[in-house]
Image (cartoon, each protein chain N blue to C red):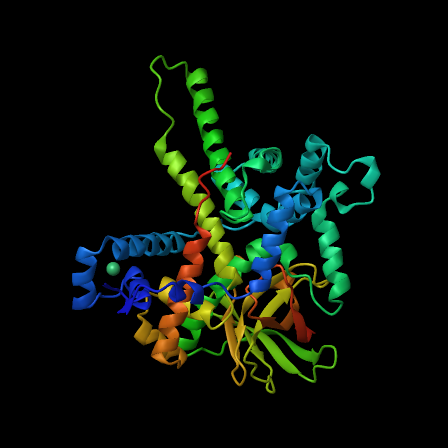
Length: 201
Length: 244
Ligand SMILES: [Zn+2]
């Protein structure tokens, strides 16, 4: 147990401050209307946007359309992005969630038209929640892949082999405290990846 | 007010038993409950990641369409990189900055997750006694860029699976870096992360079931830094090509 201290949060900032710094810089220039920053943001994030869209729609043409629409509306709506409030990646992923949901809504409208069902049925919440979690899964798969060892090994054992931290410490021959703090920091890093920006277009 | 230790909350989210004190506190503290809920949701999402949940680079035509629709790259700055697919430019820039490094992230989508999954399989293989099956291919790993590190690699059968064994005897331990084993196409344009090689150990990695090992004959050992940045590629220390 410990008292509620902000240092706990500061200590759990991700490694690789350089990356965070670069991202901040791109985000600020993006907000300021620098086209090169859009290109850089695209280079860094389009794998995530397109991967999620592809997984959610299962269709290359739809995934390409969604990806295009995400960056076009992000650029046109950049006045609504505040670099102080959240990361550019989080904002772009929020737009991606929205576009995937739009896609399903449109799709279910088409189905209704085609089938000519008289009574309107709401867009399937199952589909929308699937779309939502697709973005999350792709984001976390990416974040897991970024982890270095020993964090990666520790998490693999904890997540996919259901070992307890005590078992992990003994398998990897690491001190118990080291395993615990790696688990806490890595899990926190993953959780932060899922933070959303409510102001998505 | 004493809140639950963050280490404990993470373990509880992963499914470990909360102790009496934490249980009592969680029953009465909304802040700790909500932290735990977020971590539990994160754990559930990670555990639901499937093989298709991977980042995938869009075709180059997508950037061209965006650039076109937004009218990017006015004639005044036609030489700017914004007028062409940025991935090409930035990749080229990386190449210039790090001439010895391998382009890994062209295949990062599939490769990255294969890396995660292969790591799990490899660990399982180490925990059980590895069976030494028939060797189907082997390679001598030669030092890259004067690393002075040489070794060997073999692919052997283990039932239906294939196992890559990698041995680089003099691999020095580094506090700020670790070693990753890759398999690559002959031109090394596409590399698949196979797993982590620990100094002083022989690495045994069960290859992913769907992987056509013959398409990835190059075995490469690289140094990876703990910078958490998938955008940075690696420095190779030893490499060889598998042959019969
Ligand atoms: Zn509390």
